[in-house]
Image (cartoon, rainbow, N blue to C red):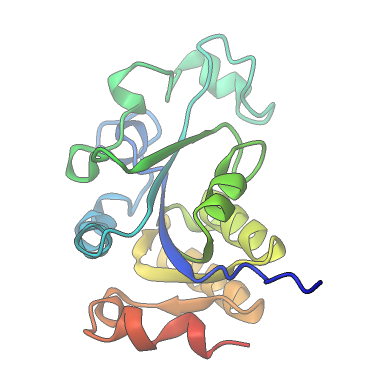
Length: 205
């Protein structure tokens, strides 16, 4: 008996670490460049909402005692805690507040896939194509994108909706991601009328 192979054609948006403690200018762990990409992330998010496509807000949270944070961050965290559950700092910024029906994934490592339910949920939703944005390039963006490729997803990165401390850091990471087969696009390309119907992943092998 032949079994029909399930197709993974759906697309999902992954917005990474756009939380008050990382984005607001006076935040304890403010990422340089984070504020600059908020407007472009809003544009991409609105497209996914208009088309009723899956949206995942991937955020960091750590216990207040630091027992689940990376050992490389523990000392600084204990002096100035951030992204502690149920605090204002841990919340997604107001411009991107998740709507009912959008998913929130809580991580405590760089990759949105590491020890989270993200991969299971994407497969349940038959998502095979990921569009990624947020902060920041060399850490959580890079780790999530590389894991996505390793797990068999087709991945696109929205370069002008993704932040880094410097342009040089962004360019170096974009170069590496292009070399592993990630589509690196700009918001203007996402806004094209036929993007979701005829473009991007469907042309990839």
